[in-house]
Every structure is written in C-alpha cells, then in structure tokens.
Image (cartoon, rainbow, N blue to C red; front, top):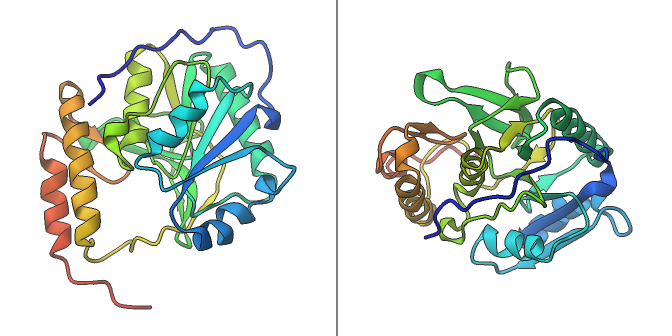
Amino acid sequence: MADAPGASVVPGAVTDPVSPASLLFVSCVSDWSVARERLLASPCLQPGARPLVLRGNACSAAEAVNAVLDGRPHERWLVWLHQDVYLPAGWDVLFAQRLQEATLRWPHLAVAGVYGVRGAGADAVRAGRVLDRGRLLHEPAALPCLVDSLDELLLAVRCDAGLRLDPALGFDFYATDLVLQAQAAGLAAAALDACCEHWSGTPAQGAVHDRLVQRITASAAVFEHKWRQRLPLTTPCFAIAAPGDTAAFLEWARRLPSAPQA
C-alpha cells in the first residue's frame, strides 16, 4: 500500500490558458461493446480529435493513469473517465473553459471532476451536475466548488503536480484518495460545471452483487486505513466515520431485495 506521496508545487501564477489542446484522455476498457456505445461515441474523442489512451485488462485505474503520467505528456491535464461515460458535443471546449476559470480562482488547483462532496458527515455538501443512468443529478452548490472527494466517473489531474493514483485501491476510492493527496501537498481539488453522461451498469437501487461487494470492501479497507487520521470522510457513495463503515454498509446493501426489472 502506498503512503500519500509528496507532490511538486504547482506554480501559483497561471501563465498559459487552458485550452482543449491541454487535455489528454485516458480510460480502461473491460467491455468493448460498452466503450463503443458510450465513450468512443463522444464527438471530441473521434479519430483526429483529442488524444485518447485506452488500456485493456488493467488491474487498477492506477495502472493506466500512472503509466501516462510517468511518460511526461506535453498536455497539461490528464482526464481519466470510465468506459461508460459519454461526452456531449463541445464538452472538451467547455471543460477547458471551466478548468481555466477554476485555475484562475485557485492557482494551486491540481485535481478536478464533475461530481464531488465538500465536508463530511452532517456537514457534507454535494456539488456537481451529471446525467447518471438517465437521471440528472444537479446539486445546488455553486460551481466551481472546492471539494474533499470526487466521483471516479471522470477525474482530471494536472500532469505537472507530481500526483499518482494508488494501485492498491484497484477501481474504487482512487479519486477521493487523489483529492486527499493533493490537499496533503497544499494543492486543491474542485468540482466543475461540465455535465456529461454516465451509463453505469450497476443498479442505482436494490441489492449489490456479491462480486462487487468483495471488490469495494477490499479497496475500502485500504482506503480507510490509509486515511484513518482524516476520518470522517464522505464520498459520493459512502459516509465513513470509522474504519469498517464501508464494509458494514455493503453487507447491508448485499441483503437488499433485488430492484424490479424495468
């Protein structure tokens, strides 16, 4: 398990504006039919548009993201996104504009996303706007908004910030882990107003599949131990007051009746 690494200081003065050419996209693909229907249908990710790096059969999100960051890309921002995310027309231009606005406001911005949480427990405030499985999540918090947690569906990291994803977290909690790494290094993370579509195959209601429970529980144990001094923490999916809270919630969710078929 990796400890929270140090990060280089992102320069406080913004010199070059963020543009669509500043963005490099990265994703892991486990189901090419899903990727073709969603991610690869995005207008800005068509051949000849924005650069896209795809990694198949990866063991973790870190495997794909860190390899690209270690290659020192010339783009300023790496944008990680799930294979089931669709970016509507003009999204790259909009996201670059939102990044520019947020960076001018917070010069040490190093991590950004489209949906996150500020604070924890009773003080948690959700922030962001995303079409999630056909339902619009539009939180009242003004955007951009500094956050303490981000959803993994889409995550941008400034390539020169020295941050890396933790491979021990697999495919869960790595976005919030990156936010906490950034904060520990004196950097900032924010949710931006750049709505995209997320077509997750995981049911929004009903029982959680045993296999998914096992995967998330394993990642949660690593995350909760790593950041035990920062608890309580609230992510877009879990409220964690003490180590073991995620496992307890998932055990309860596993026993729920299955959601009715549409």
